[in-house]
Amino acid sequence: MRALLLGRVLRRERYNVLVSYDNSVYLGLVKKKVWEQDKVLVNDRVWFEPITDTEVSVERTGGRKNYFLRPPVANLDLLVYVHSFKNPQCDVRYLDLTLGLATLQSISVLVLFHKADLLRDEDVQPWTNLYNSLGYDVMVTSVYYDLSALKQRLRGKTVLFSGPTGVGKSSLVKALWMDAPVRVGDISRFGRGKHTTSWVELLPLDGTYVVDAPGFSLLEMPAMNPWDIQRMFPEIETTAKGCFFSDCLHLKEPSCAVKEAVKKGLIAESRYNSYLYFLDKQQEEAKKR
Image 1 (cartoon, helix red, strand yellow):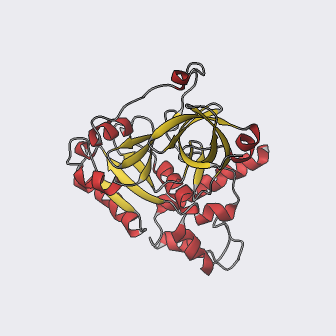
Image 2 (cartoon, helix red, strand yellow):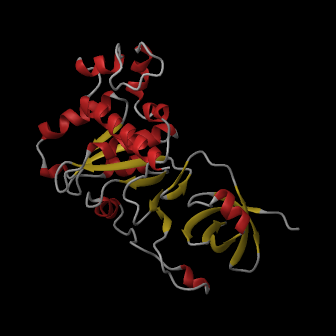
Image 3 (cartoon, one colour):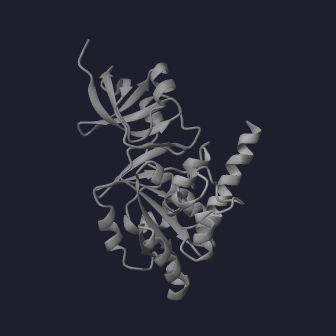
């Protein structure tokens, strides 16, 4: 048996992947056992065995530092959440969900308050102050602004852009990298049939790898317990240590340090409302299971 080689998954489509190795790209045929156990995600490192000059057999995945199943991507360096307050006016709960899921996996997040040319500074500043105070990096952007600082911030990283439909993610990527392709190629060029579903792909763009994930505007919230939801909000998790009851969910319990902090303005009401929303959503989903 020949020694296995270590490559990088550039694209995933149905049960095939494209694997990059030594400046070449190969069609990766994934063993059923590997697919069922590891899924094989975009940006995974995979051990493979060559089959032909254009095809390889994926034998197993390498280690992951983080991953999402929807979209199917692994080993992110940075998650960029694009939020707008106008055209469209986005719900901050989606922002808080993204920040929370990233917190659980220790993924760095950059928040972009986008389409800033449509707003006054005083409309954006309170939100910038809030999320900066929570330790998150925030930039105020527009495709009509100078984006060189943002481009430099992304250089050398593997990045996933997330945010509601219509917020301007695609136009922002094209403003950052004018030659960014919307779609390039097709697995069918290897003779394995035509594209029938959307795929997720890693685009190399001037020193940055951008995850192109059509159909995956927002990260999906997996099933989780109340304590994981609390961990999504570090300021709530920290304050909860002062609650009288160790299992306090910060709903109607007496002597709740979190509710008291909200009343005093020490925890933003919008963040507390997001916490309550996700807690209620998980409880409703648990009843269906």
